[in-house]
Image (cartoon, rainbow over all chains, first blue to last red; front, top):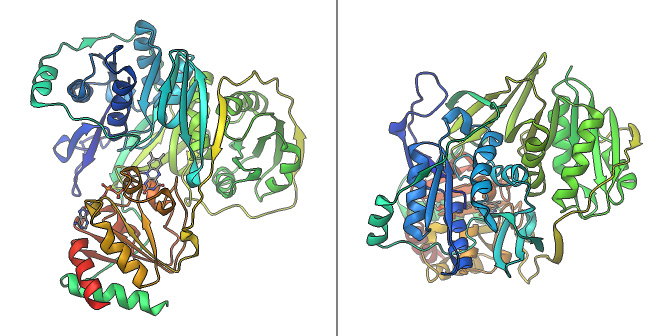
Length: 246
Length: 312
Ligand SMILES: Cc1cc2nc3c(=O)[nH]c(=O)nc-3n(C[C@H](O)[C@H](O)[C@H](O)COP(=O)(O)OP(=O)(O)OC[C@H]3O[C@@H](n4cnc5c(N)ncnc54)[C@H](O)[C@@H]3O)c2cc1C
């Protein structure tokens, strides 16, 4: 199980002096949404009969993600320390995580489909290649008979396909694939104290990708005209626009 | 001069529209653009690959479906060896993301997904992405000089125009069998067809609960409008999948799209950003959806719904 912390940024933000990251004061982190679905899927699949081991690459933020996953009910957690520069390259991340896969020899490796903050959808396929496992992406409804993984994978336009791969294998779990469980306060306390093993990465490739600059962005191509007034004015405006085209 | 390899995306036996945008992104780098078509019927599809800016079309005949990412991975590996590109470009789609990062891993290439800008200055490639819900633009460099695999976001480049056919050749690739066994394929079906609606009222997670949907369904019905929804509404089982707008749902282009309690995630925008007029109602004045709307209101959708019902 690979997890990560996803960051949310505030609407006003400042960057670090070197311009390659957002100042920590303007971000809050939480366990990435798709990773919550992946942890839930792993817990449901093992259902008391098996072990769910979490791994995350990174620094303190990775440790927080791991504790959130432990709170949900995962059994153990490992962290592979990586610097922010190393985390920018999916190859370096995959190389680090594949060491944990080599050590643990799991039957199934799950990742979230994407980190919601940067949305790259690359860790899963890169790790599958690094660990030489067959894989499927954007899956939901996972089932396993101990030898084969069966899952439904999604495509654009509402198309989905049932696929099977032999275990060991890797799958990236789609956002909303299930209802992630919450841990109790007791679980949270236990997770807070849990020992998180640190795996020292060896032979990491030099990052091939470097983030050189961040700047504020004006997303979207349209200029929005805001309706002033209360709900009555908003409703009237919507109706007049709708009636104009009917 | 940058030599690019563009990997065409094939969906249901046709070259996808995003392929023409990927060609345009590659052509903007100002060098040769080799367009690769991998399909059981690659030779026949080459005609659809006649696009302005393409210098050569290379076809690979592969037996599997257009969803077989292992087959794509091996085919593109062979294409990279054959074409020796500095940049490999494909669309940022579910099909491409399934193989592209694995390709970069196996061939020791640089990888950058969801790119909105790509430039070349001599041998130096620069890419830009829009991250954190579009609030931050990030620039990337590729210092090791390894070839770059870039997946381009839809609607970031104008599509390359159809053109006279370019030189086409076939590349023979010995493809290992795929480890992914495909079973039943399900396509959306149902009595609701949002693509025919001139007006769509769409609800998102801001609707709060299943019971609250009735008011919006009522408003849509009374106005003869379609009822759309963001994905969490379908995941929660509050509406059937035919109502889902977005990348993994339907793509709509109504005259008016009213987004109610929808934040404006990229995957949702993919299905509605070409609507003529977009109205967004959201309690959060910083919601990304406002950057894509023509008319916006910071308001509670339930209060707005009450007022709409009173007016109808
Ligand atoms: C591969 C992939 C494919 C995907 N495909 C799709 C797809 O096809 N379609 C899709 O929609 N999503 C898709 N998603 C999910 C997408 O990333 C987002 O998670 C989703 O669109 C968010 O839906 P939302 O805006 O309703 O919810 P949220 O992002 O939670 O936003 C809810 C919004 O409601 C506002 N709000 C809350 N209460 C109120 C109120 N009372 N009044 C007004 N506003 C309120 C909030 O401020 C917030 O902006 C996909 C994801 C992945 C990874």
